[in-house]
Amino acid sequence: MGFGVLLVTALVLEAAARRGAGPATAAETLGAVLRTTPGRVVVLLAWVWLGVHFLAR
Image 1 (cartoon, rainbow, N blue to C red):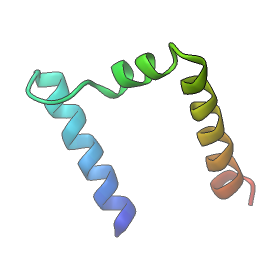
Image 2 (image 1 turned 90 degrees about the vertical axis):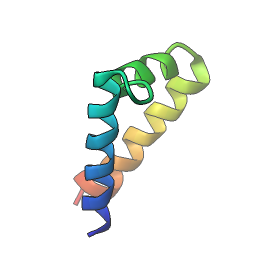
Image 3 (image 1 turned 180 degrees about the vertical axis):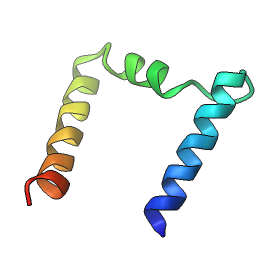
Image 4 (image 1 turned 45 degrees about the horizontal axis):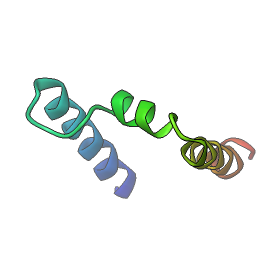
């Protein structure tokens, strides 16, 4: 249930951003984060965490 709520929220925010009525799109946000070294480290650690917890079973 919780993951479903998060997914629907993310989709609603993305749709609002693409219409120009909301915050930055996911691609714009990720692009801004990846411009800095600390941001790249955070993204890398997030991928590792996701891989360990969801894909390595």
